[in-house]
Length: 369
Image 1: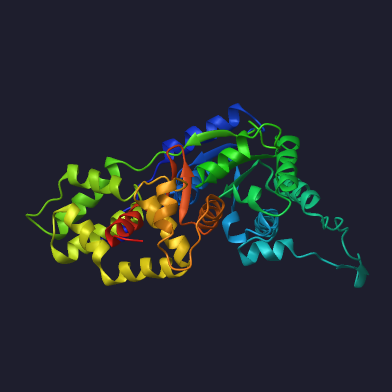
Image 2: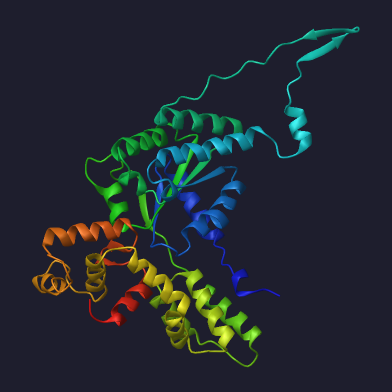
């Protein structure tokens, strides 16, 4: 029997639409924006990559957030792995066929043919290596490479970021017949700075698209499975919709909430979310997040969770109540930047917010700074 964790929504039509856009604008990448944990990486792996394979492309995925100090090296590593896979067949028969024969026999005699010619080594310099890898991989595959770069705004945050971005753009433009690219970004501020800063290497280079959240199809799957597990009990779609929106439309988190409700036999989604927030496990996680920053940063988080202006005079006066704090506008700004880098804060069109809406609710419920 299926479990809640087996419920997945596939979006092949959306993937096909993105591939069609790439085909209509050679050399221009797509940049998909959405907050973290709403399903971007799952989509790349389970929807876009399979559709790219069907179209004769070779998808190559790299998560730049896992290699923040050297994001271009992460891209090259992913390309090198793909090139190795393309050169070495998976089957033993394929491997045998690829094994070079050094000698042949002629009337009982043996003739040594020597080593086959080798291509020159890949360049050491990252930008040149990227260019060479794309060309070789496309040639080995005999088709176009689809480069999928997760959290691409990391390029702009790395040391020498402008140079890295310029190198990536140059390769994507120069090799547009051999490679196309899809970027994802969870920082609206970082992605906009990367793509929309006049004079920057990526200025208006990629087409920025809001990645769509999952909707009723996903929620209906949860409701149907819940009803199968609990005959006679149902989850109201209105409650599921409002609950899903409250948690930031994060499918894995919604699945966890409904699993906890199923274990208790609850059908009230709001009560299920409240219970999830109050669970010892979740509270321990949030306390650990708070303890990872100092008291002043905790105060700034609390202020932002309450939708108070972080740089206002009243905020500075409230932060002054923290023992040892001497709040200034400059100090608050520094705290905000640090909290953004740690992933606790994000900035979007609505201003600076807590990245996790349930964490924000937890901070509001804690009361005073």
